Length: 432
Image (cartoon, rainbow, N blue to C red; front, side):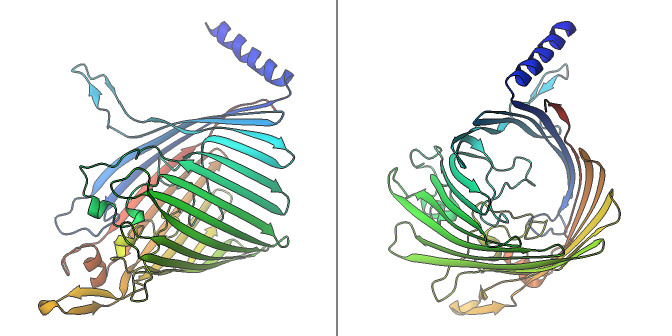
């Protein structure tokens, strides 16, 4: 049997080399242990700390020959001990977990023009609207097609995806709340157009339009569209990097003739000083106001990367639809080739007044201060295939934090979250 396996392996290598093709097999093993006492929401006196371990395993195969490139990635995501198939003998297995992360092929049908179809990962610019969401063990994949033109200083991408989950509406759900806002339920169609220009070797400009189509209540053929227009500016020199974004959203509310607007502005800068990278950034996400603006929808953008590792403000409802202002100084220090540390501090405010109902039908307004968060990380790099990362997050809550999280005043306790993650990415085979 061993001789047969060796023969097949040698035969495969011979065929690949004969065809002048490239064939790569690699994998990823990612194990993460977490302690949660306040992740996403404030804990109270009776809250218990949760300890758990999750694991992501991927096997990736990439084959390139002539005008075609294909990629296949099998993924299994599970929590340790979640096996739901067991017998008295102790044999355990799981009925869930295995999935396909990516399975696509790319056809270069003309010079610089490509068509990519199948399950794929999309991530554009700095991932504010469309990102891989890779911190999540499952991550984010799309069943889609991508038409793209890429040539030195200009890029044109058109993507289109369809979700077949909602072929008809579900009469068992609360449709009034379920369809209240487009961000409240899953899209039916998602399309985007992305253009990138290299104005110089240090400066790039990206323009994009993302359109998400949602089924209207009690129908299978009427759609409401959420449109997001974006401008991304990127300046990068040897020591300085500046990123700026402007986003505008527009959509019609279901079962209504009212239209809603929302916007987000971001600005960040990082400067390299010897072994230290010092940064500062600020984000402004609109909330509901008297001018008709609505809370900005982050769509499928990165959350963990930008809004604190404890994920307190990842949906518009997390701040009572008041939007968000986030100011985040940060520093990354590389001790040597193997050790580095990173610290980032978030100061959060509501972009709009947060009203609290008082007796008699009147309203009072709370302080806009939503508290702050300190995140710390240490990374040990053994080699290019293996590293260990430890993260720690602590939230400094205010009275307003307690209010938006539905906690009685003064009843919250110290919110803390920690994780240890081991990532191993071996390459099993590469023919050239």
